[in-house]
Amino acid sequence: MNSAAKTLEHPVVHTRPAVLDYLELMKPELTSLSVLTALCGFYLATKGGFNYWLFFHTAVGTLCVGGAAGALNQYIERNYDALMKRTERRPLPSGRLHPRAVLLFGTLLSIVGMFQLRFLVNPLTGFLAFITFTTYLFLYTPLKRMTPLSTLVGGFPGALPPVIGWTAVRNELSIEALILFAILFCWQMPHFFSLAWMYRKDYARAGFKVLPVLDENGTRTSRQILFFCTALIPASLALHYVGTTGLLSAAIALTLGVAFLLSGIALWRCAGRRGPEALGKINFYARRLFFASLLYLPTLLILMSLDKM
Image (tube, rainbow, N blue to C red; front, side, top):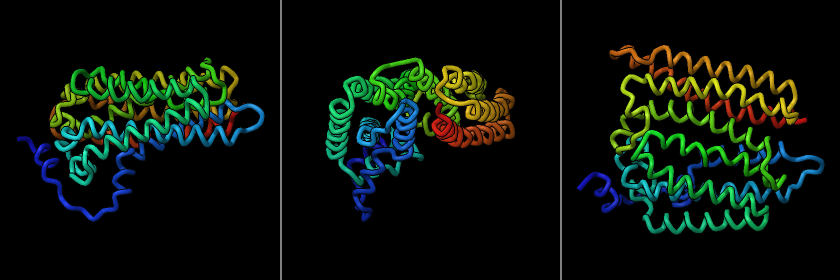
């Protein structure tokens, strides 16, 4: 019997309020970022009067669907989470919540969010939310244990929230929506690869076949990071060229993109070397790149929204 099974079969009594555990199930950091990107897409798509009621339903619906995906992802991966130091204290592997309760919570939350986006926003937005939810749970989640290509697959649902925000207003897919998708897709790769490199021992322990686990010296990982950091620069400038955002945000986007790329280059220059010192440098630059990614995306999207034409 593995440690995950033992943890789930013999839960420890905790005094932490259950509401905090349910909040943790929703992966608030990831979900809040999804909501932010959706609302930026909503604002960029708005022309004329601002529809606050539609804005509210888009925000709450995205929050519910994103939170449900996070909860059900933890339900599916509860045994693997128990094997990873980064996730072993989550509500399920620690025994603070019962799996059936989490399954019910995630299912109900997804129904509420889907209903809200389908019937109180528009059918296209509801459909995109459904695609986001299902591909994340039933395609990306199992593929993590099968192939390093899972990260590219996971980039698809991860890049849809700003498109959801856009279609909530326009009720159509357009070049602007595709540009927002491209920005999010390119950003996710260095963001996730740097995180996975930092915790590659954890991922290996749980049997996840992400690229940093299979790439011993970081060569392939750093090349992927470099490619997507480079691609992110023209993607971030494209909204200006189609007339959605102004010159100021384009200039700032270029500056942010170059700075982000330089962080990727620093990691790439260290990759391929062997020895404890080289590995320490790779870990340092991976951590720096990860935190740079956390600053890059919200800064870029908020500035674009403020500089909307």
